Length: 340
Image (cartoon, rainbow, N blue to C red; front, top):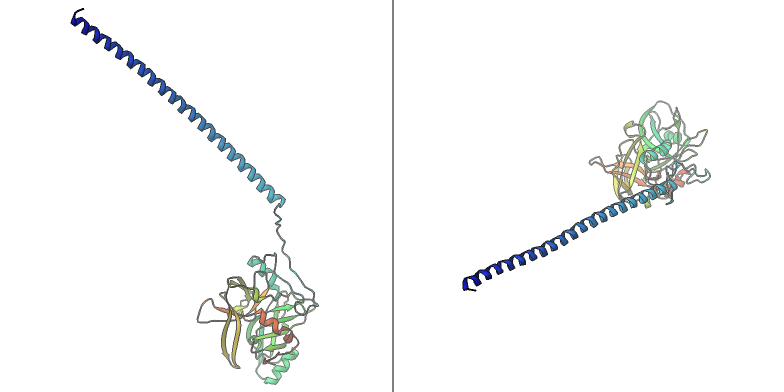
């Protein structure tokens, strides 16, 4: 074999070997790619199956929880039951709370304003005072003690008050009835006013107790604990501002233990321990109750800062409770000055 033949044979052999090697390599590569493709398709199928299983599990859980919630509401499993509206009335034999009617509807004391107003309003009264131009001071005092009517009387003022004892005992401010010859009390459900007798009053505390007589028990409000009231609590005022009968305003207890002084014809009233509220209190509201969310009286609406907005004051129930029995018994209490 000559040299050219050997070269030619070597080239052909190399070409054939290269082709065979390339084919084998391509076959191996195709095999690996096929394996990876199969794994990818398998993983996709597995992921899709897992997602469907998770979704089915979620829907089943939601259905179970919804069913349990519905069942708990229907069967009252957690012990809550709506309480019907009711008014608590105490024995008339209790001098401090006789015939008391509370606006409390639930133990939590979170009643709606309308519920409080509906329960409390029958015990709120409108007070009109009249003066006899011809009467002297002594005649005025005698008439008030006896609940007598005088002649030639003209209207002198309007205020508010509330029945705190079903036997006809009414609490109001002393300045509402100060100087009056006649006191007329309007009670819801009665066409004509009652002529009231002034039992006792305290100028320094600005409190007075009146008495009216009826043929049946009067609705009455409970005097609560002003000490338990917290700043920020909701409060309700009911009264007769500017002769707009039985007006309702709401607000919060803004502060406690306020002190103010107000000058009048008799001297200076130095109020202490007052409750401050942003509830609207206007002329005619004086003597009306400031109620908490249980419908209990925690203050007696008394004054307002005319130079500001949303600053009103009420005498706390703690002050009332300290002298109310004395006022009912026609007394003035220690260090007090009676208007009688």
